[in-house]
Image (cartoon, rainbow, N blue to C red; front, side):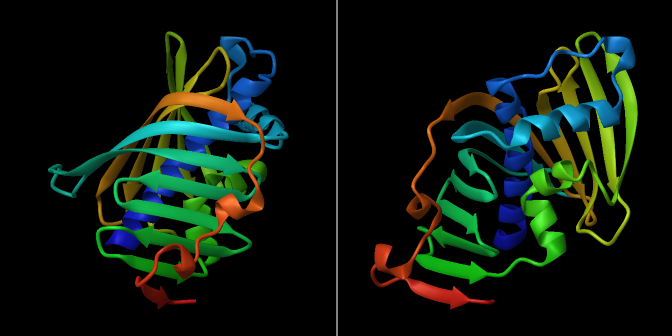
Length: 221
């Protein structure tokens, strides 16, 4: 459960970072009448790979399949190239060079894993945006005022069945993402603050047992 929650939270935070990076150097806004899923993806892709890093403050709300609240959290996502650092609640998680490592201070446990391609896609939707949603079907579900809603559906096996994203039509920045999982649970993510900054040292995206003396190490690679 913890692993799935981390994957879904990383997924939400990372996609919100797409908008964060776009704020650094936004491409000219497309006329509202010409907004399409492809145009939004193209503008997101064009904004992904800039120098430096981005910090996104976000909040999430999880509901179980019956619609009952299953928890909420606020956190920070640090994004730099293909590397992530996520901090929320008792969890600190990093992803770099194909390895996901996370420390849970409540359990005093450090877990190391090698995500599958499917998990990686869930952890980092930026890969999916970089390929312009290759492997996903997209549909513009509607436009209302200053926003447009796009639904993304995976065309291959995935633990996430649907992602509905609300974009600002003026700049293409996503403001809310609603993830529906195969088990019918729903994770809603919202961005609170975006802060571009200078690049981090590579060590910022690594965790080791030496940093947490006495912790239990669970290696499931």
